[in-house]
Structure formats: C-alpha cells, structure tokens
Image 1: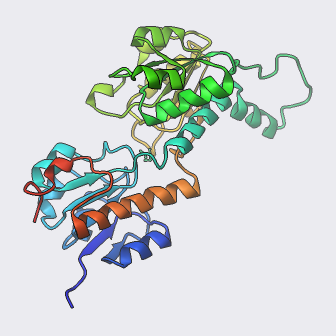
Image 2 (image 1 turned 120 degrees about the vertical axis):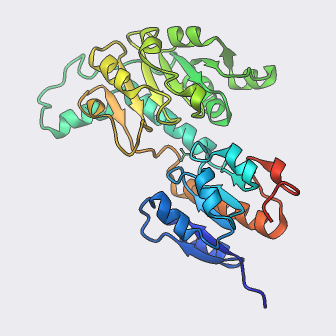
Image 3 (image 1 turned 45 degrees about the vertical axis):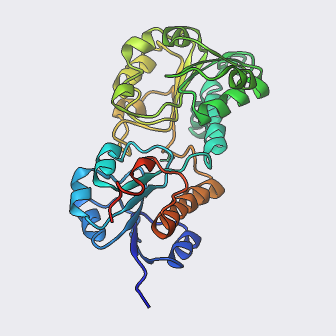
Length: 332
Ligand code: DGY
C-alpha cells in the first residue's frame, strides 16, 4: 500500500479537523500553538505537500523555494495578506482562504464593537470595577446614538454587506459605503446602502466601520488626514486588518477628542498594541476575535482542511485564490 501524503498544521486546531485530515494524510501539527519562527516552519514543512496556516504564518518566495514539495497552503482565515499570492502562483503552489463561513459571525462582532464603542460599554465597566460608581447621574457615560444614525462602511464585500443589513434593517440606520467597485443596484437595495465617495463617507458617518482587505494600497487608508475629515462626535471601528489605520495617529486623535471613540479588533504589528492606545479611555480594544465563535472557528478550520483534501486528492479545491495554476501551472 502506498504511503499517505504528509501535511502540516501550523497551529493547534480542533481534534475533529485533525481526524478528518488523518483519513487522507499523515498529519504533523504544531501542538505548542506558538507561532513558529520562519526557519522552524520551513523545517517542519520538509516533505509536506500541504499546510494549514493562519494569518500569523507568512508564506513567501523564500519559504516556497525552501519547501519544494509543498503544493498547497490553506489559510484558516478569509484575509490572506500573510500570503504572497503572486509568488505562490509563480511557484505553482495553490493558495486558499475561508470566505463565507465567517461572514455573519464577523458582522455580528462588528456590531458588537459599534455598540460597545458608541455606548461606552467597556469604559463604564472599568469605572464600575474600579469602585468609582457612587451615584447615578443624568449624563454619566452618555454616549452616541446608534439607531437612526448614519453608518459608514469602508469596504463592501460580503462582511460589509452583512453589516449594512444589520444597520439598515435592525437599527434603522442610514447606511452609506465606499468600495473599489460599486454594488449592483439590486444588492444596494437589499442592503439599503448608498454608494458615496471616500470624502463623503468620512464627513457623514456617525459610525465608520472598516471592512476592507489589507494591501499596500489600503495601508494607512485611515490616518491623521482622514480622521480630520470625520465628525468630532464620530466613532471609528476596525475589524479588518492592522495597518489599515495609522494607530499612532488614531491614539493622538482619541486623546485630543478629535473623534469621540474607537473600537479596534486588529492592530499594526499585533499582537503588540500601540502603547498610547492602551492609555486612552475612549477606545474599546479586543484581541482579533471578530470571527471567534466555536462553530465559526470550526467551520473555518474544516473548510481549510477540505481545501487541502480536495486539492491533493482530486485537484479541485473548494475556495482557491489562484485557481489559474491548477493543471499545467501546478507543482507536480
Ligand atoms: C480572517 O479570517 O481573516 C480573520 O481576521 C482571522 O484571521
């Protein structure tokens, strides 16, 4: 009997995902769940045809050259800025991600941050826990209105659309959005969202939520100049990727109350957080958990596993990012 191909799981995943992969492959896994340094990741990938990665592992030309047997890297994430996709395509290595399975869960969390930020949930909890609450008063932690306000969405892919539906249909918000390409009229009507240019988005949003992918062109899409165009009463929410917001400029703006508050799930250089963000009160900070429910994280890991199985056993991945390599362009 021929040996099963070998694959590597770069971070600890759910046992049922390992078992599922084990029906098809010899499975090696980073049980420690620590992010492996690049040299160690390369060492563990020797002889492996497939890898399950997360946003913390970089797959670039150097890794691809050092791992000549690798045929697929399946990211357990919808974002894939840790992949150098052109380098993967050039090397004939398939890249996959996990769209759709996390859309609604991530949109829920986007709204959790809108609510927590506008209504000052964590700031007031810290006050209470610190034993500072000794009387009720009319304006204590009075925040911004969510229902009926204007929700601005920068980036209108699946998650942006799911957020728009929540805002428009659930909270009676006026929804405006800016995106590289405009949605078709039927989708705009369903989301009750109106397309505006970026300057209008910045100027009119009461709550601005970022849901665009990270790339060189979206680096610091929100910096001091953009924040200066926002209402002083506005809130800014980032559930997209660190680096889209200039965190240092945001910390200054929050301290000087140039905008009212921010809610951040992602950070430049995470898991490090800009120290100034840790000292301003008007920011809600969470550790990149927007898609973190057990069912959704299991679905993401299972989809990544299905991509590796479908590609290595039948040549037909479920959610490829560079399908053009399949066939003649793929590593043998
Ligand atoms: C994603 O799926 O891109 C989330 O941010 C988790 O990395």
